[in-house]
Image (cartoon, rainbow, N blue to C red; front, side, top):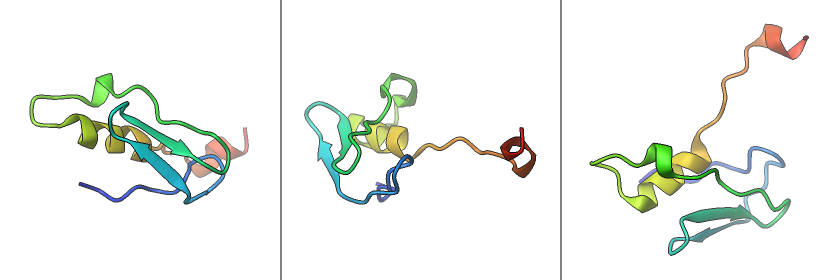
Amino acid sequence: MDALKPCPFCGGIKLKFNKCASVIYCESCGARNPRISKFLKDDVTEEEATVLSWNTRVDIKEDQLND
């Protein structure tokens, strides 16, 4: 399983992982992972899907920052 990335909103590293509820929560700003349903596949556990949902980031290109 991959390590958790810092919070995408505040950069916080104080994260709580509630495996029963499939939720990762940032203690610094309150951000939570998105729903895990789109990450669930036959070969992916709920725990892995939760980590994937937290670690997935949108790629922003340099020219998009200037818009």
